[in-house]
Amino acid sequence: MTVSCSTEPPLIRIENLCFGYPGHTEKVLDGLDLLMAPGERIAIMGRSGVGKSTLLNILALLQDFETGDFTFNRRKVKRQGRRQKEQMRSAWIGMVFQAHYLIPYLTVRENVDLALELAPRRVSFGRAEALIDAVGLSHRAHFRPNQLSGGEQQRVGLARALAKEPLLLLADEPTGNLDEETGLRILDLLLDRDMYRGAVITVTHQKQVASLFTRRYRLAKGRLHPLAASKSSGVTP
Amino acid sequence: MKRAGGAFAGFWRTRRGHFLHARRYLARHPAQTILSGIGVCFSLVLLTLTHASRRGTHEAMMAEFAGLGSNSALVYVHESRPLPRRFYDGLEDLCRAREWAFVPVFEETLFANVSGNPQHTRALYTTAAFLEHFRPVRAWGHALRSEDARLARTMVGDDLARRLQISPENPYIKLDEEWFQVTGTVTGLSAGGSQIHQFLDITLATIVTRPLDHLIQAERPLKFILIRTADRGQIRDLQRAFPAFLEAQQLSALRLDLRLPLRQGALRARSEQLLLAHGGLVTAVCLALSCLGILISYQLQVSYRHEEFGTLVALGASRGHIGWNLFCEVLLLTITSGGSGLLIGITLGLGWSWWGSAAMSIHPLDLAQSLAVLTSVALATGLVPALLALRLNPIDLLRLNR
Image: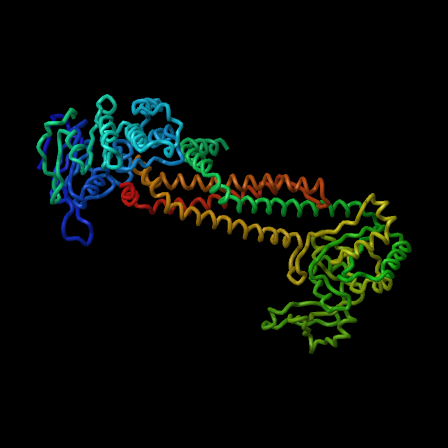
């Protein structure tokens, strides 16, 4: 099932994508379709083991798929070599995890700078400062991760993921380790268009988190099934 | 040169980030960095001191020899037991009678020979020039059989040969547990060789197997006599016996030369090469063990830093990038530790030379050689974790982050 709500050239076009692990007859992803415009925000829900992480790996250009068509920013992924995929991932894709996974021996500022150092295209290092300020941690820029609270660490993780201005941000349970209030603050930042204009795909188990996204899917039987638009959504994708 | 400079500048531009990251990692894990690098540091201290000692001793000895005139003599006593008083008296008489200046040179060995012990003959490995000068008389010769190739070959003095009843038909002698094949006999004061001759490249020297008797009976005019002793008591005896000499030389004490604390039986080549090889071997073993330690440490790190590497992958780093990070870390760690060792070695060498009695000489060529060794080792050591990083699976790394 292909769903699109934009007339712009799509950022992601996936058609009939299949993937199965060697030695397993059942496909994890079986005929999956997805169409996503630049700047769109999507939430994907699903039971454990249904293939959400596999889908994220494929979207992050880390995992090869078996059949189907996957176009990312007008480039056919199947035709790209390992180095090209690394370059695409480095330039266009950001990732946020359930745990913050900051580099423990770097300060907040250095953690964010690291993302800029790894970015293939030149991004002003002033952006790191602006992002740290935007997530409200400018007064802790020289702190190490172990000197921050869980919510602060996740905010740094978010700032770091957004530093290189990726076209697509993949978020795997970004609020899974946080209390409700802190989680909502992180989501506010994640979905704040002033802070980040790119596309977001988040994987979550939390209905409350998914409800903040206008496009929501359930991953089941190897395919994405659209869920009804949330009435309580206060965020415009 | 310009091209090399340009290549280096290009390399630095592209890899600067890796080195900065490596510097941050090492600086913020001081205990781990020090523990990992201490072995390399120690190895370089050892290497620097070995070089300094070798060169310093050589220079000091050459300076002494340069000061010897035609009537000079160096006394070399091939003896490990304290010599009787009559030896020193006789030596003094001899020196006076022949108008020899007397400059003792000492060398402490662990297994020096004992007078009258057939082991004397093991000193008879010498240079061709030395043999040519003294033209030792071979009572007979005997070609080694191929199956005897592993036997140590030696020559013995004619007195000893008579005592042991050595003949061409019975050329084998056993010393302790080691067999020797006697390839010839030498007469009186004829040529012998030892590492000290070869080290100094002296062609006019002799070994005194029965010191006093041979000195007195010698018909050959001696230019050098070397004293070699394993006994510190002998040095004290000599100091007592030759106060005038010490005064003339403005020496407060005789020098005990510790250059060659090696088993004589193990010496088969020139001493300089051997000493270098000895120091080099110890250093090589230390360096190899240290690098092995670093490699083991980094192999473990590749495992327990999965979280960090996964984060780097999530930020867009390739496996090659992680490999370069590790390579630069090990390179920086090894070079910094080795560089510190070099500086400590230089300081210790200079301090030792200044405050102690050891002759030490720090030479830029030796330092350059040490740096070259260090750089090669660092590059080789850094390569292994880098290659390990290339085998990391990015999906596994990211899986840990979920």
